[in-house]
Every structure is written in C-alpha cells, then in structure tokens.
Amino acid sequence: METIEITPPSQQTAETLGSGLRAARDMRNLSLRDVEQAVGISNAYLSQLENDRVKKPSPFFLHKLATLYGIDYELLMAKAGYIIKNETAKHQTLAGAALMSEELTSEETSQLAQYLKFLRSQKKANTSNVKDPIKPT
Image (cartoon, one colour):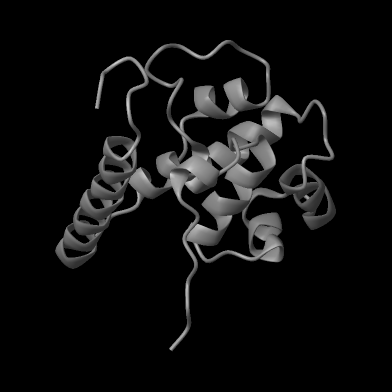
C-alpha cells in the first residue's frame, strides 16, 4: 500500500501559479503531453509555467488552461499577477478550485468531509494547546 504524506496547513508554503497548475493537472491525471494535445500549448512551456519560470504567462494560454482544468479564469489571472483578487477569491487556491470543479462520487464527498473534519480538529487541538500569555494559568 502506498504511503501518502500530508503536510499540515501550518507547514505548507503559499501556493504559486505554477504549483497550483501542477496540482490541477495532477488531479485530472493528465500528463504534460495530454495537456499539450488538448489545448495546443507546448509541454516545454507548460513545464516552465508549472516550475514558475515564466514571469508573465500569456493570458490566452491561462484561459485555455482554466477551461481545461475547470478553474475560474479570474483566479488564474490573479495568481499570475494580472488582476487584484476580489475578497471571495482571495483565499481560494488553484488546487481547491480544480477539486471543486470535479464531479465527486458520494463516497469521495464523504471521505473529503471526514478528512476536512480531521484537519480542523487537529488545527483546533494545536491552537488550544497554546497558552495565552495574558491569561493567568
């Protein structure tokens, strides 16, 4: 059985455009060549995008990727630095947007809900163990 390591939210780094695109592609089980064939963007350029080597990615290409991955185009444009994020998109990640665009089975939805509950309980447990320096103990 394959072991999957989960990085706690407190130890995760901020999502970049590249890492978000990679996560969205991985969630769809697509190779770089699959994406190249689907949208007509070279796999070399896609690789550079995913590794954050492209400083100003083409909005045209971002639109094609947004469509393929089921991600809001505005969110991609914000991650690329072209537009300022609105309040609702501020906390959304590309991976989360890609996940939400998937049609999940009832079993997957249930498992995600259980895992989210677990993560939140861990976060709550970690914050409740931190003593308030102002309150007397």
